[in-house]
Amino acid sequence: MEPDPITIIIADDHTILRQGLVKLLEGEPGLKVLGEAENGREAIEKVEALKPHVVLMDIAMPMLNGIEA
Image (cartoon, rainbow, N blue to C red):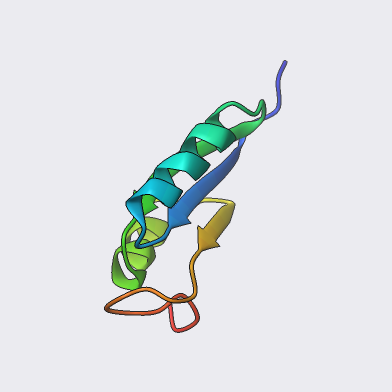
């Protein structure tokens, strides 16, 4: 029986970076990307809804930066 994967949300305002991280992480066993966010507010909403184990967040994003989020 395999253990449950570590779940992740990626928050970054740069689409190409976000998509690249998703591709890298999805290829790793034991990791699952639950969602992506383009800004701090969206990241908070996704974290509250999806309850990931880990959030990879840029600290400089529009609307609400990563530190405030």
